[in-house]
Length: 78
Image (cartoon, rainbow, N blue to C red; front, side):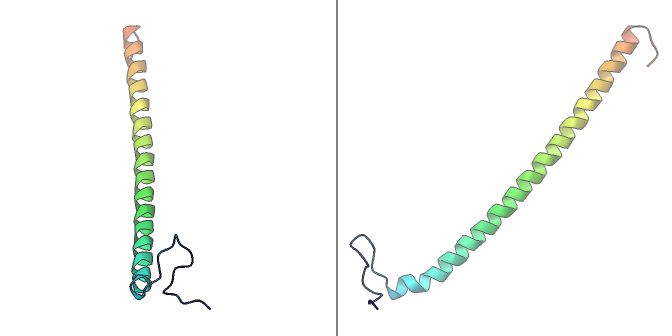
């Protein structure tokens, strides 16, 4: 087994006691960022759905007003 404080090849940094103790903190930070990203994605998706619903309702209301205006214009009852 090789010494963990030595680099495996010339491009890798040597593994030190400090980098080993920081790894769990880094891993926890990545997990937190992942969870926040999931929540932001869920929130954005939820807001997009609400926006689509509101847009559909507004479009339906505008179509109803247009149809009523056309009816009045043609001399019909609203």
